[in-house]
Length: 138
Image (cartoon, rainbow, N blue to C red):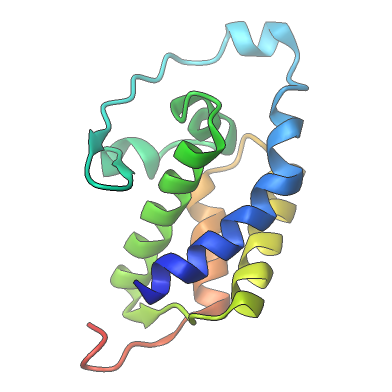
């Protein structure tokens, strides 16, 4: 729950400046984009995407996978952040300030290159802001 609140704050910062840039892609580049098929499993609040699909998605591909929907894109980023934190044995801080910092890190890197892996961006933010998980947090 704490990680969810932290991620929500960070994702709002990402969406504020990141998403409009995706609409600026040249139409030729969009036509050459590989087809991405979403198979989300819906639970009470979020969509869960196949991990093998989102870990290998570029920023632009993840945006397309989300259906160009900010909330769905947030679900992808949140899922990647939770995966990264789990794999690295880290906990994400539960504060609005940390959320803003994470959001700005992700936004800046995503805007710089839409063709880089989204997971690499999220993982870097998790490594920067995460803390070693305690036995009770694992």
